[in-house]
Image (cartoon, rainbow, N blue to C red; front, side, top):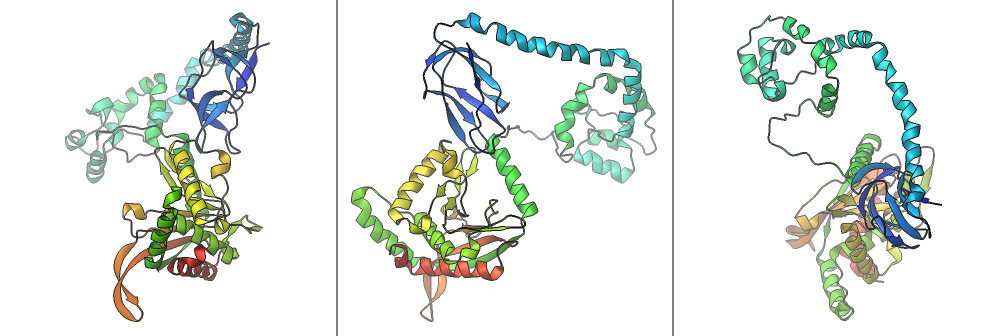
Length: 434
C-alpha cells in the first residue's frame, strides 16, 4: 500500500516550512536513513531523512514551495512490488473532495450579482487608498485638493506632481463616482495593492527590487519586535582593558599550535560570560510572568551572522569548559550555522547571549534581548585609547561592553554586579584557564 510522506515538524515551534530542495526524484529507491530533502524551518535549513524503504512514486510538493504546513503530504512512497498505478486512485479522491466546495461556492455570486455590486459600490467612494506619489500628496494638501477627484497620468494611474499642479481647488469627485463600477468589477486589482496599503509611504516610482523574506528572517523580525515591545530593557555599559587577555591569548595559541587549535578573543569572552553568569545567578534567569526560572548552568548563545539572517548556536556549560574546547565547538557551530545545517538542540535554549561586532570595527552598541533569555552582552572592538594605568595616563587596548537586561527579572544592581565580575575576569584572565 502506498505510504504518504508528510511534512515533518523539525523543531518544536515549526508550524510550516519551505521545501527548499528535493534530493531524490520520482523513481528513486530510498531506504531508512537516506536524506530525501532539505527543509527550511523558522530557524535553519535541515535535512529530512526517510523512515521507510521503497520507491518515490510521486512528488506532490515541488521544491521551492513555501508555507507547506506540518503534516501535509509532500510525496508518495511505493513499497516493493507496487507501481505508479497503485497511487492513481489516491490523488483522484482529493479533487473529488474539493469539487463540492467549488460547486457550493459558485452559486453564491451567481445567485445575486446585482446586490453584490450594490453592496460593493460604496467601498471605493468611502475608501481613501488613492495611488499618489508622496510629493503629489504634499502639494495637494497645500492646495486643498481632493486627490480622489483627480485622474493620475503616472504609471498604473498614479497621481504625480504634474496632475496636482494643473488641478484647481474645489473640483468635484463626480467623474470618479461614474467610474466606480469598474473597480468593483475588477475585484482582484485592489487585492493586488494590499501589501502597499500596509506601508502608505512606500514610493514605488523609485527603482527597486523586492526580495522575498526567508522563514528565518520572518522569525527574526517577529521575535525581536516582540522583545522590544514586551521586554523592558535596561542597558549598562563598562569599559574593559584587554591587554592581559590579548597576552594570554597569544601564549595559549603558541602552546596549542601543535594541536591545530587557535583561540579567538571571542572564545575567551564566552568563557568569561559563562563564569560571570554563574557568579551572579540573579542574572542567569528567565522571567515567566508569575514565576522566575533561575539556571544553575550557564549556556551561552553566541550570535552568528549567516546569509539568511542571525542565528545563535549555544556553547553549553560555558563556565566549566576549557577554552580550547570552547574554541573547537565554536568553529564547528559557526560553520554549521553558515551552511544552515544546525540541529535544533544546537541552537534552541541558552540562558544568555553574547553578540560581538568588534570584527566590524563597531565601538559600542546595545543588543536586543533574545526571549525568553534575561540578558545579552554586546561587545565592541578592542582599540587603543588613552587610559589611566597605575594612576598615570597611558595607552591601553580597551573594549566597551554593554549588557541589555530584562528589567522585569534583573535589577540594575544585579546587572552591574555581573558586569563588574565580567570586567575583572577579562582584565585578570588567568582565572579563565584555572
